Length: 93
Image (cartoon, rainbow, N blue to C red; front, side, top):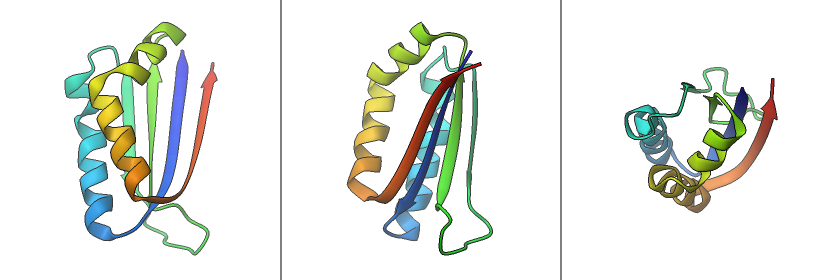
């Protein structure tokens, strides 16, 4: 199994909502995405990220396929255009 974790700070609230909507749609577009958890930060501390998501894949091959899927590419490009800061972690378990 592979976990793909992404955290982001974005420029404004409208972009944050649009990004979360795009993330939530991923399982409808990528059938080999095993599980998805996503949400906005509610604590809102100065060192907090605005939102985060965790994708789970059954294996590395599915994760690699995900990185090239058009829905992921669109999400990634949008995120890059609006983020102020971000962090990412990919690991097997």
